[in-house]
Image (cartoon, rainbow, N blue to C red; front, side, top):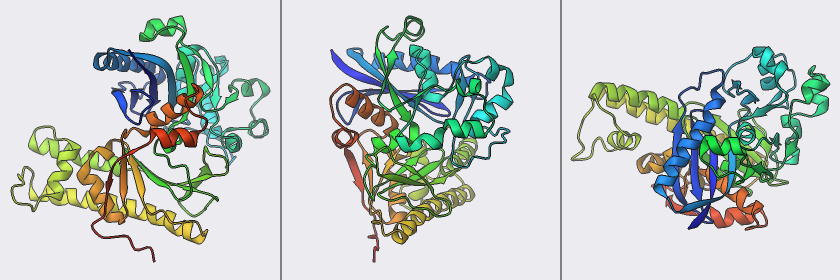
Length: 420
């Protein structure tokens, strides 16, 4: 029997899980698409997601035993003990004036939107911590690195925003990524099919584990977290600031992460894909649709959509790749101004990384090499890194990422980059 870490990442629309060995590749992958994202208690579905993913993983790899579990997820989603959920993306009323914290306005929004649930809760959590609580009963808040304290909250910040001592006590204590939260309890084992007593480790917020899972941990390294939105992330030795750049500490002490968010690149193409499917009366994969558009003028390409719709699709491709180029350029210009090495390549993660044509379009647009890793679900790889360190396989994040993040393919631009 093989032993593996069960890595789990909670997204906005789905829960992903994988069996991960001490290896850059996953043994098996599963995804559960949420059905109740608009429900007031959307988080209650997460345990169902764990169960269904586990059932699928066991069908794919029946000989695998779970050595431990590690959980990451999106934030700042806020969830109370009873499952009342305020997703990170939902607009809420808030009077918070603090500009440093990413969480205080969401917590304040929760207490204003759900005052009864806020009053009755003894604890409120962010996304991954709620699932950890559901599995183990442990009450924790994962702090990515010491410099994140004011980006989460301090007692002084809470007091300044009008939180009472009793309200402050609802927020669980900080722990480090990779900390042992506890063990799967009897109730959770019965609900999910997990083995009671299985170790559960803390992952980190999804963007942090994605940076680990792409090894974007040293000066000048860059990655593209590509999904319905895209986040272009650049690791730097000094903080860099410019309009449209969000600069936060890296999980590596002394390092920083500068990011530019492109909010709708993937979702825009998804809307176009839906339009195509209505016209042709059948489903088409993202991969085949991009190939159709890119290869339109090649001999032998079947023209299954109208010329008008093809032109609309090419416009979408042009627009979103230009947005990507602009985002990377913002980071390059800020790096140059700060006298930090310019990024000369990029690693891409997420489902888009499996689309060869789309990745090559990005590569040619940016005129830099783009690499795809052995496992494109970087959040799950990052979870594996943190769990393996906790289990004693490695001594540091850098050492574990070096061993567990490997390039499967590198796309080269047809026109070399000009760095002069």
